[in-house]
Length: 196
View 1 (cartoon, one colour):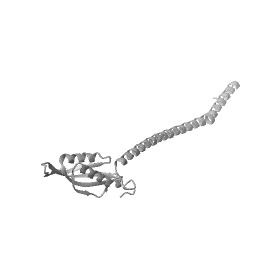
View 2 (cartoon, rainbow, N blue to C red; view 1 turned 30 degrees about the vertical axis):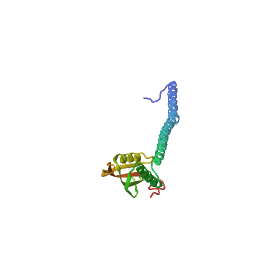
View 3 (cartoon, rainbow, N blue to C red; view 1 turned 90 degrees about the vertical axis):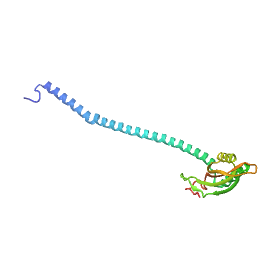
View 4 (tube, rainbow, N blue to C red; view 1 turned 60 degrees about the vertical axis):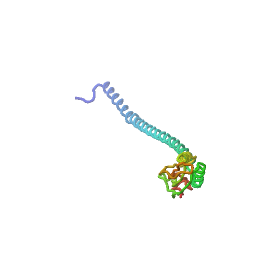
């Protein structure tokens, strides 16, 4: 059994097939396969770059969202600063309360300010007063509603209201004990940043 054909024409055909196969193999090994690998690498790099772009866009969206949140927080803080008095305004608030109570005919019995303490946020100090006054029941209520509607945040809370004495005109007076609470902005803008 012969491996090669005996006919010269068949031998040329076999040689042609071998040459075509060799050219095909060479093309596959040296042209097609490296190009395929290169294309796969390029596709992989494009995929990585697209992923990095998506991450960058997400970060930009986060950054823009954070900037909006920061601007909102700054606006809210500015509003809060307008509502919360500075430490220097505390005497003015006390004078406003004294003036309101005097205009309503109420008599102060005692005013005891407490030492300011930091609130839970660490940005403000909580200032409390214990007040005791005497006057007509409705006037005490008017004072509390006026104090609660001050431009600055001042929160009254009633501890006790009890009958006190009767006037010469026969009107019943009450003695009211209540606390006033306000938050103050310490010097330096915060308790941690240089407060008290």
